[in-house]
Image (cartoon, rainbow, N blue to C red; front, side, top):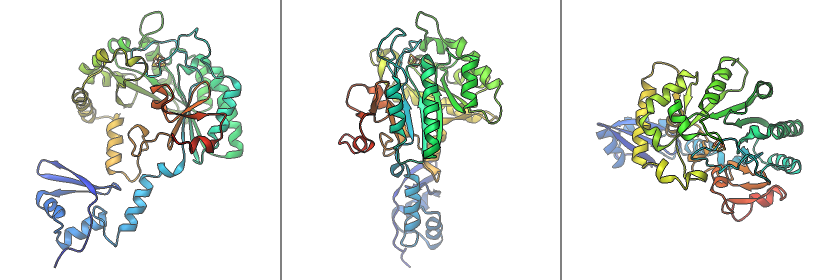
Length: 385
Ligand code: SF4
C-alpha cells in the first residue's frame, strides 16, 4: 500500500549512524539511516508513518492544524508587540572597557543624561505597547552613575502600571563598581534584577574591563557578586553575570567557568564579542574567527556538561530549546524573525528610539525609528520599522 501523502518541512542532522529530524514547530525524532532514507523518499511503512504523524515530525491533512497552532505559539513574539524596553538613563561611565559596545562617554561629558521630561515621555511611550508583558532594562553607560534617574523611572512606571496592569518587570545592567548597600537595598526591595559583567578570573577580566584612571574592575565586581549571592534569599531578584569573550579569553574556557562557580553563580553565557563601539577600532587585537570561537565554546560547553552540579551554559540551553522546545526562548539576538522593533525597542538618553540594543550600538540614524515625542503608531508604522 503506498504511503499516504505527507510533507516534511524540517531539518535533519546526522549523528554517527543516526539522524536527528525536527519539524519547524520543534517536533522531533531520532531515526536510523534506513528510516531517514525512507522519510526523504516518502516511502514510510505504516508504523513509522503513524509514529512521525503523531509526533508532528511529518505534516498530514490530519495533523496540519496542530502544526499550525504549535508554529504560531513558537512565533508568538511576532504578534505580541515589543516587551523588552532598553533604557539608557546616561551614556556616561566610570569604566573604559576595551570592547565597550555602547561607546560610553567620560564622566565629565555633557548632554549625555536623560532629562526628566524625556524620562516621563519614555515611560508613556513604553506603556503604549500592545504586549501584556513589559521588561524595562536599564543600560548605559553605567546606570548607577544616575541612580536617581533609575529610581524616578521605576517610580513613575510603577505608578502608571496601576492603571495599565501589565506584567511589569525591571532589570539593571551594571558594572557594579558604584554599588553600595543603600542602592542594593532599593533594588532588592523593588525586585529589580541585577545583571553584571564578569569576564573570568582577574587576569582575564582586568585585561578587558578597566577603570577610567587605570586598574581593572575585578576586585570590586567580585566583592559585590559574592555579597549579593551570600545575602540572597528566596524572593530576591536574581543576579546574573555575562561574559564577553575576547581573543585573550580563548585560552581559558575552564578557568572562566570555574571563576563563575567559585563566586556562587550558576549560569554562564559564553558570549562572543561584537564589532560595535570601542571594539571597532581594536577589532584586530580582540577578535577571532568563527572557528576559533566555536572551538572555545565547545570546550566550555563540554566542561559544563561534565560537571556534576547544577551549573548551566545559557547559549547551549537557548539553542536546545529552539530546536526541541514548545516555546521559542525569545532570545532576540538569534530569533527568526529577529526581535528588532517587534520584540524590543531601545530608548536613548535624548529620547531617540532604536530598533534594538544592537541598533543603538551601531550608532547613527540607520536603526533609528523615531523618538518619544512621536506617537506610538507613527514610530511602529514608520517605513524603517
Ligand atoms: S562596557 Fe559597560 S562598564 Fe564597560 S565602559 Fe562600556 S558601559 Fe562602561
